Length: 304
Length: 228
Ligand SMILES: Nc1ncnc2c1ncn2[C@@H]1O[C@H](COP(=O)(O)OP(=O)(O)OP(=O)(O)O)[C@@H](O)[C@H]1O
Ligand SMILES: [Mg+2]
Image (cartoon, rainbow over all chains, first blue to last red):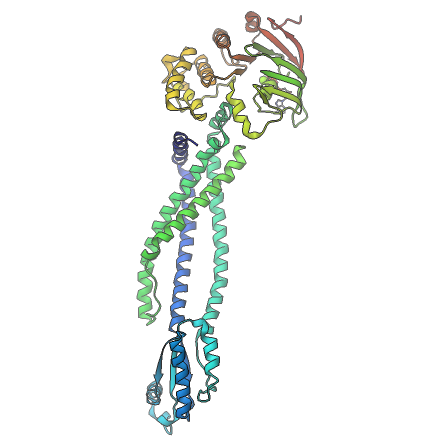
C-alpha cells in the first residue's frame, strides 16, 4: 500500500472516531474498564506470587535433636547440614541452643509456676535450616529424619505444604478471574463492533460510491479498522493512567496497614518497575479488542 | 467490449429480471436501453457492473468474464466503468471538486494526477466555476454534471447511466444527454437506460428495447417507438 493511501486511510479512521463522539466515548470507556480490571488482577497476581516466593525463601526446616542426643550423633547431623550447605542446597542455618529454647519457652509461658520441674536439661537443641530452593525440602527432610540423633516424634517442621495449598487455591481463583475477564473482553469487543457498525451505517453512501468507483476491499475496510484500533489504544492509554494512579494510592494504603498489623514481611511492590510492561500489555490488549471489534463489524456489514 | 450470451437473471424471490439475453455492444458505441418499467433495464446495467451476477449465461465486459469472476477482480472491472445514477449520489460534505477528487483518491492516484485531472473533468462537464460548491448549493443538472465528471475522471472505457435524467427537467435533460454524446464522441462507449422518449427519438442512436426481460427490438439509429 502506498504511503499517501495509508495517510488517507488513517485520517479517515481518525475522523470516524471524532464524528462518532458519543459511541466512541462509550466504547473507549468499556475498554478502559476492561483493561483496568485486567491490570488490577495482573498486579494482584504479581504481588501474591512475589510474596509467596519471598515467604518460601524465608521458610525454615526446623530439626529438633533428641533430648539425650550423643555428641557423635549431633556431629553427624551437623556435618550433613554443612555438606549440603557446601553443595549449595542449604543457603544458611542457625542453631538454637538448649538455653535459648528454655528462655523462649519461659518467655512464651509467662508464668513460672508452669515451669516447675522443667529445666534446661529437658529441652532439646534445634537447627533452623533455610533452603536455596524450597522445592528441595521433601528430600532434605527425609534424609535428615534418618539420623539417630533427630527427634522424629515432634516432626520436622516446614511450612511449604501450607503455602502450596494456598497457591492451589489461588490458582482456582485465577481461573474464575480469567473467566470474568473473558466476559468483559467479549462485551468490549461487542460494543466496539457496534460503534463501528454505526459508522458503517453513517457512511453507507460513501462506501457504496467507493465500491462503484472501484476501491479495493482493503481500502474500504481500513478506515474502520483504524477506528477500532484507535478506540482500543485510547482506552488503553486512559486505563493505564487510571490503573497506575489507583495502584500507587492503594500501594501506600496497604503497606501502611501491613506495617500496622506487623506483617511487614509482606510488601506491595512499586508500580514503576512494571510500568513499561503494563503499558505494553494494555496497548496490545486494547488494540486487539478494538481490531477484533471492527473486523467483526466490517465483515458483517460491509460485504467486502 | 460488452457481450451478453444467453444471460438470464432470476432474483432470489423468483422474479425474472432478464431472460436469455444475447447482445453485443462494440467499442465507441452509444446505446439506449429502453422499455417499460420492470422490463429489466436496471438489471441489464447491474449485470455489467457486477452488482448482480447472471443466474445463467455469460457476460463479458472490457475483457472481464463478469459471470465468473473472482471477488478480488471486481474493483478493477469497476475502474474500467464510469457509473451514473438517477439519484446523484454525491457526498454532501464534500465540494464538487472534492467529490471528483475522491474517485481518484480511491484508485490511489497521486496528488499531482488529481490536481491535473479533476479540473479537466470539471471543465468537460462545464462546471469549472462551481468547483468549490457543495452539492446542496448546486441545481439538479449541476449535480448530475458533477456525477458525470466523477464517472469520467479515471478515464473509463465504458460509461453506464441508469436514467441519468430521471430527476431533471426537459431542458436540463437535453443538456445532459448532449454531454453524454460529447463524451461518446471522445471515444467512450456509452450505455444509457432511459424513459425519455423525446430525447431517444431526437438523438438517433442505437436503441435496444426490452420487455419482460427479453429483447423486443434492437435498432440502429432508432427511436422509442420504432417497432410501431
Ligand atoms: N433486487 C431485486 N430483487 C428482486 N426482484 C428484483 C430486484 N431488482 C429488480 N427486480 C425485479 O426484476 C424486474 C426487472 O427490474 P429492473 O429494475 O431491471 O426493471 P427496470 O426496467 O429498470 O424498471 P424501471 O424502469 O422501473 O427502473 C422487475 O420485475 C423487478 O421487480
Ligand atoms: Mg430501473
